[in-house]
Image (cartoon, rainbow, N blue to C red):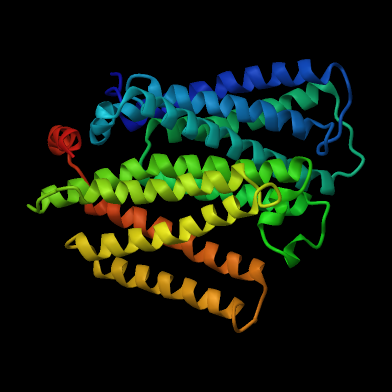
Length: 364
């Protein structure tokens, strides 16, 4: 008997099929791009570079198809509210998630290839062997991307955003031709010419766009939680969604306008992220009833921690701006995962409640 459409078994079968197709396409594309050459594992002209581009494209496609096909991510009962979102916004959201998935897998394959290149210096791989490696990388990552696309949630979107920014930043750090960039600030990576600057700025832009997608999930979870507890939904979830989405917009501006091009705009956008985060934390803790006490305490600790991190930079001078940014980013990453998971649980919607959630989203 076939598994019900949308069940875990169906998602596994579909993801496996996508992986098999990705292996075949990846191997063929790898052999075609190599053009009969023997190439090293990693480096600019390598099987790793080919595998990264091919894998990025196929994982993005796999994610999008898994999300759009019947029984995929958009068919989840708890996500019926997404059908009420304007079509243009839904398209932008899908493009954002697809692009972020492709970029993340591209960076992962590049990193793995670089590690193997250090272990197999001088190794040159023939077209057949290289094609198999490309196919294997594409299959493994497409399987994971298809599973992710078939079950999208606020937590998975938050994980995607954090992963893209973290891995994109690390990739820019290790590839930077300026070994002293850290003596200034992280934005210096975005000022670097070549692939380092592009990776860092693109990671910021992509992460910001994904955060605007996440804002919709946060808004809906707040609204659902209020309704299920018998409170008036009002405009609070919408305000919180706007504040959260504004953080993503500011992050996109930071990536689009490096400080070397326009210092005022870059710094204003960066400061805007901090202000909006503070406003979001205040409104959510002050005006959303019945939030878990642990979440309130953790959010307070993070806000205080960021203030202390700034004070350790100025006026104490314990570390430079890069150190402050690193500590603050670590606190915000931790907060984002905890907060999104807690809010998702706060607004958990049963299948029977999904229809009411749609009507609520339309009214809110």
